[in-house]
Length: 146
Figure 1 (cartoon, rainbow, N blue to C red):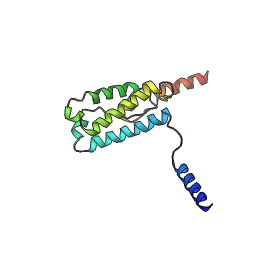
Figure 2 (cartoon, one colour):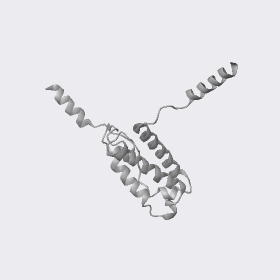
Figure 3 (cartoon, rainbow, N blue to C red):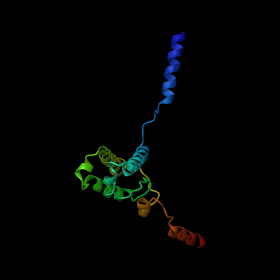
Figure 4 (cartoon, rainbow, N blue to C red):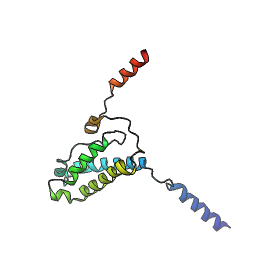
């Protein structure tokens, strides 16, 4: 009796610690974007891949931005067609290529209509800073005045 209770307690403690929900399209896209940004930071700072990173365009991945599809496609093109063959073969660059291809596939095919884009600020993907769109606020104020 005591052994059965201990086994049951161990089973429930393991079940409570594991993540039981499957990843959704949104959560997978979000986690992949964070992984890519972390990998890009490593590539830019590591001495062996710093020269490879000079060719890569600056990108700040935000899955809530409608411009992400075009910017990610352009970024993927640069990663796939890197001028240096030795850079293309480096493990971190191969991982960047694979993760970028996966994210692009998720955004454009798998979760095509599941993701909701809150902004369409293409400059924010290039700079990392989002600027508020004042024209929409003014239009809303004008409509409220009528």
